[in-house]
Structure formats: C-alpha cells, structure tokens
Amino acid sequence: MVRWAALQGLCSYCGKWRLRLGRFDLAADWARGCWMDRLPNAADLTATQFHALRGIVARSFTPTGQINRADGARLVELGLVQRAMGGWMPTPAGRMASRS
Image (cartoon, rainbow, N blue to C red; front, side, top):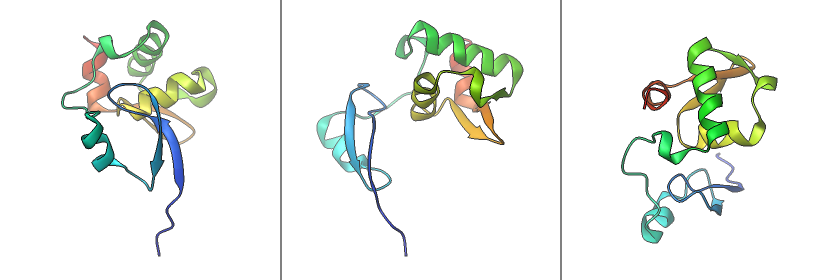
C-alpha cells in the first residue's frame, strides 16, 4: 500500500511554491501551464544556485553540509542533482546545465 502525503514544493517551471497532493501532481501542473518542456539551463537558476551546481559538477560529489539547503532543494526539483550517500551528485542534465 502506497501512502500519499501532501507535499509543498517549488513548481519546476515557474518557481512558485505549490501544494502537491501525492508524489507528483503533474496533471495540475499541466492544467496551470506550469510544465517544464525543456532542460533547465543557467537562466533558470540564481547566481548562488548556479555556483553550487558548478561546484557539484566539478567535484562529482559534494557533502550535504557544503550546499545551502534551499539551493540544493531547487537543484533537485529541476532534476540537476540528486542526493546520494550523504551528499549531492550531478545528473546528466546538471552536467549540461553547468556548461551553459
């Protein structure tokens, strides 16, 4: 049995906080017009988020405490990094975005 929880998170496209019911609320994002139809790039990130992403990509692994939680959450939300083994690891999309 899967338990669904109400989650609050950033919309991947517009960056506004949204209440998400269940794991993914993709149908509601689509209806609002908030749908990421492309890979994120540097224009979708603030300067500190982009700097954090470049650092993660340069080292291939960064311990959790070295990146601001809000910046890390935004990078995860956009699919640019993932949390693994107590730190942050870049995804292929993150590697491409760091070079843009």
